Image 1 (cartoon, rainbow, N blue to C red):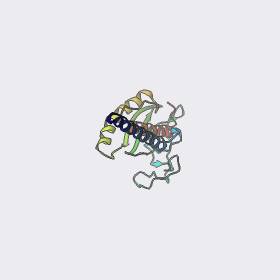
Image 2 (tube, helix red, strand yellow):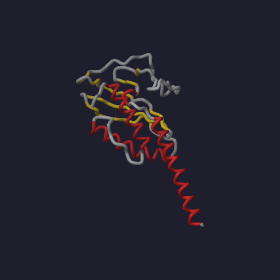
Image 3 (cartoon, helix red, strand yellow):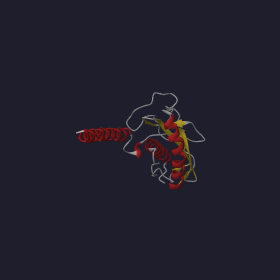
Image 4 (tube, rainbow, N blue to C red):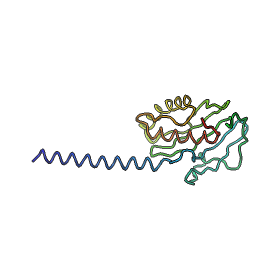
Length: 178
């Protein structure tokens, strides 16, 4: 009798974990944009201020004055190489359940030359540890691939996905096709 009870208790626990897992994955998928190309970003060049609508791909406008891009100063494009605008471009701020992620790219000579993390997940100590481990790996992968089409870092799904989305929006702002 006890063995049967233990079996069904374990089976019930597994079912609860599976449902929770699916709910968590559904939350992750629904919180991330479906089209990275549609993400908006803030463009910054050495010769000008910032420009952008400030709205994300769903039309949401951030209310934090520190992360809201200035819409009154259009950016003047820098020298272009093959349709790519050279300069520094801020990616969209991607919010996750563990905090916001935003990267900035530097494009020179038509190539992606640097990726700088402007914001990263800091909801708790574990999030900080995961992000501090994953961000350098993601940077190297992006520079090697010359693209936002890079692999997730194991154990850092939210950081990886939000990094890639912000990176893609910054590359889109630069006209970078990688």
